[in-house]
Length: 229
Picture 1: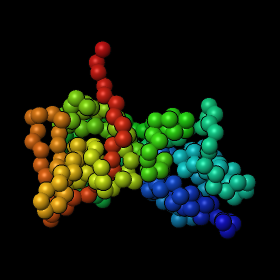
Picture 2: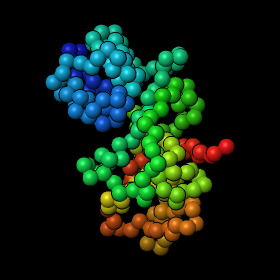
Picture 3: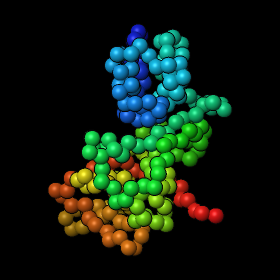
Picture 4: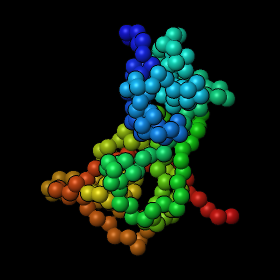
């Protein structure tokens, strides 16, 4: 790999390798989209030392390399220590369709902003995913998927999965409306159709048909169901 003199070049390269968007980088660092974009565009010299450290962990690169260009270039951490954590940021639902956002079934009662987990946990619990940079948190909304999860529960999503190749729970949109449903591939005489199903029997299933403005935003890999004790 050629030497990258500018901080913005190294940051851009690491962001692309991790498969993160500018918004997810900003969310993971707790800064504005504009601040992250300025660093990527070279309009500011670099992140602060603290944010550089956070960005390196989020992107899976050496903090020294990201800050100075020296040492190992792109080196995903393979051995964990107490400080080797991966920040899994909140998915930007508002940005899923530009400035308009998505119309959800119901607004979630508060938001899970993100997690910090160690890489051993990810390897043990998520052996199959499209890349660590594609993992994000979606806050459960509505009651259609009870009892699998309750409104406000954290859902771990792989946003790198944008096709329904296997049955499972997906976050998707139809037009401007966002849903989290079980999607099932059903064979028919004219081919495979996709049926969106709720676990709550009060909600009717519906089919995804040709001509619908349908887009998969990600597949839900894990859910954590809250209970009051």
